[in-house]
Each structure stands twice: as structure tokens, then as C-alpha cells.
Length: 170
Figure (cartoon, one colour):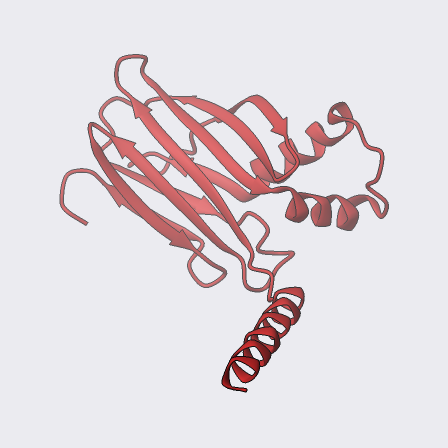
């Protein structure tokens, strides 16, 4: 009898777990990796966006986004990233990011950008508003790597512009 109750409880827990997964809250996040490369004098930027968020963006922009080709998607995403993501040097000059490529995968979309490295960057200011106009709970993580040090910042609607310094511990 005890085994019967244990199995019943286990079955109930599994069913409740499956139901809760079906109603799980979707989180809104994007990830950006910035590598400052002294040897090539470049800043390499890789944005990892979730495909379902990109599809929501395309539907918001176009209405129906089914059947679009990469050639049709690329200019939309390029304009979106250029509008909502920027890097500024320590003098406040916006660094011109060059669109390198985009990979559209089942789970994520990778966007590659590059800029010239401004001398020895003591400080950068980053603006990251990716998807913030679309999703209230959007959180964007940015990792900046320079000479073996990594600085991480989390961006949201209330904090979409942040400084990163490499001269001091922050």
C-alpha cells in the first residue's frame, strides 16, 4: 500500500511538473561578447539573440514574417542593431561598427560586427537597448574582454547605458 502511495505521489509530481513547464514564463535576454584585440587593432562584437525574440521583432516590423530569406531579414536586423547598440570611446565618440555577418539558426541568431580599436581604450561606454522597446522584462548581458580581463554588465530599461573601465577594478 505504501508503494502505491509513493508511486501516486510521483505520478502527480511529474504531471504537475509537465504542466508548469507548459506555462513557464519566457525570459527575455540577449548576450553580447566584445573582444578588444590589440594585435589586430580591432573590436570584435558578437551578439547572440534568441530566434523566437528575432521572430517577434520581425512580426512587429512586418506583420507576417514567415518565409523570409536571410537576404530579407539581414537589413532589418542590421538597422535594429545599429539603432539599439553602440560603443563610445572615452572622448564620447561613437565607434562605427561594421556589419560582418549574420547566422540564423534554429535556437539563436548570431550577429558579427567589428570596429577599429581606439588606441589603448581606458574606458568605453556601451548602449544596449536590444529588444527593450519590444519586451518589458528584457535583460542584456555584455562581456568585454581586454588583455585577459573580462568586465560584465547587465542592461535593462532603467540602465541601458554603462561605462566599462580597464584602468581600475570595477
